Image (cartoon, rainbow, N blue to C red; front, side, top):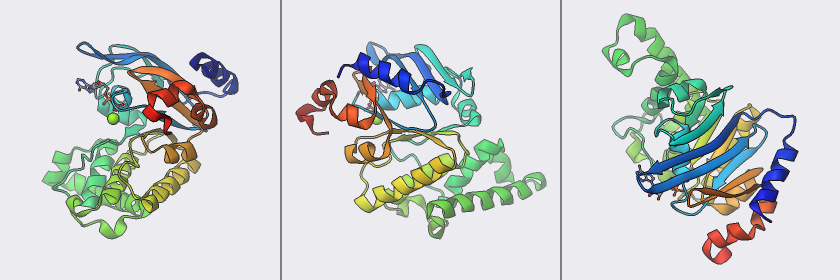
Length: 270
Ligand code: ADP
Ligand code: MG
């Protein structure tokens, strides 16, 4: 099935519902490399949307541009009724768009609890510095943030590891902690960069449960992932990138049969 047919059916299906997020013509160059080339799609809260594609396709760049880590070369990103393209990362986060990182970027000198507290601080606009100085005005707030962070760890099932250094955690738990930290921002839209990469089957199952639980609470998701069985099971919409170009978009059962997609994944093993 051609990409254009998939796109047409996509628009027809979603008539009448308001997308929580929409990109139009999003483009990003790094020097001569066109990492994203005129990407457009809509994301609806009702659907868990996956962004897939081979290595170097532009998936992480997409998250980085949308989340304000990189400036787009051109294009628009609509979220919360406004164009957020080019806003700095902290402003995007404040508006309710949280992301995790592909590689673990947890603060390794800190405990599990402290890592989540950083996310809470960002949301509450309390400086980590003023918290560190323990001014009287910030002490009460600090206590509240600590309790909040602990609640998130409980929710995610990591409360028994609250006082451990992050370096002690196995990969699966570090990934869950990455999600916990993004959750601390209380986002409306969460973008996960390869959350299942390197996880054992029981950890993927746990992650799947967590995503479903949060979706029930009204959170929207975009998931970048290589683990095809996970993606095919969890997502309702899939956007496929290859060399920075959107080559297909549609529900998993259509994408599975899309020949261009299969070709992009050498050997057709999706
Ligand atoms: P994916 O996440 O799909 O594997 P990336 O978004 O990481 O792909 O990369 C897309 C392309 O952009 C690749 O060619 C990569 O080398 C390039 N790229 C990504 N980040 C940078 C950067 N900071 N500077 C220069 N080139 C980059
Ligand atoms: Mg990547």
